[in-house]
Image (tube, rainbow, N blue to C red; front, side, top):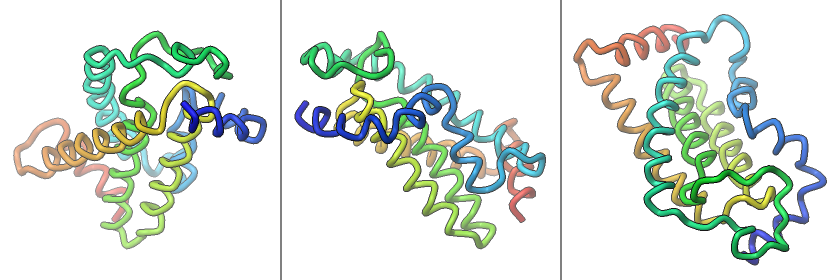
Length: 180
């Protein structure tokens, strides 16, 4: 809780970012590779498929653990956004932003543009920490989310490159073409 209280000092500087990231993280990542243009449509579809998988898994964890949110234990935290009604662990933003960063890292490395991957992980760290700043997560929620997001993205990429002709693999192969 002390880390959450200290992070609150950044609220004024990050308020607009925090609000935007509640519903839209992808725009932030899209800025790293011109994701808003038409060139990377299959990449965005592949990422969306990975995110749907991530959300399903992360929500199972949230309901299983049922970890209280910071404001439930310390009302003086006073979150600056609406506190979600499910458990705090793991941070969904950490899971999802890690998965996005992992996928972008794989595609950008394949394309000889590793700087995109490095920036994606830095952006992931900021997005996840913004949830602590907002007062709705603990640092340990992010740590768990980073681990789960890495595992899920690794699994999704492994399935997409497994050699069997699945919809995920076909989408992946189309996305690869956008990067090469």
